[in-house]
Length: 149
Image 1 (cartoon, helix red, strand yellow):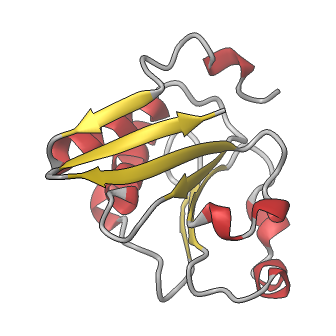
Image 2: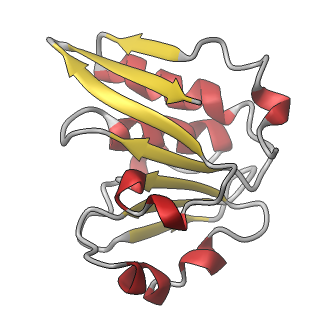
C-alpha cells in the first residue's frame, strides 16, 4: 500500500481545527510525510476547509500556497514547482465518470504527483484502491478532519 510508510507517522486520525490557520497547518503537517504518488480524497460540505487544507499541503510541499485557489470553475490546478508536484482537482461540477476521464484523470495521478481531490467521494469507483479519504465536517466554529480507513 502506498501509504504504509505513513500509518505510524500521521500524528492523529482526526484534527480539530479552531481556525483557518489550524486547518492550513494540518495540511502542511501531512505534506511533510508524503513521498509521492499519494491520492487524497477530500470529502465534506462547502466551507468545511478543503481548499484551506490544500493550501497548507501546497506550502508543505514547497509550492506557492498563495497561488492555491478553489478549482471549482477550472476543475484542475497544477502546482509543479514544489518538492513533489501537486494537482488539485474539484469534482463537484462533474456529472459523469466520462467527464472525469476526459480531464485526463489517470494521467493526472501518474508518477510522483500528489493528487488532492475535492469531492473525491463523488466518483469512488475512479479512486485508486490505496487513496486516502479525509472527511471534513463543521462542528460549530471548528472544522474536523477525519482520516477514514
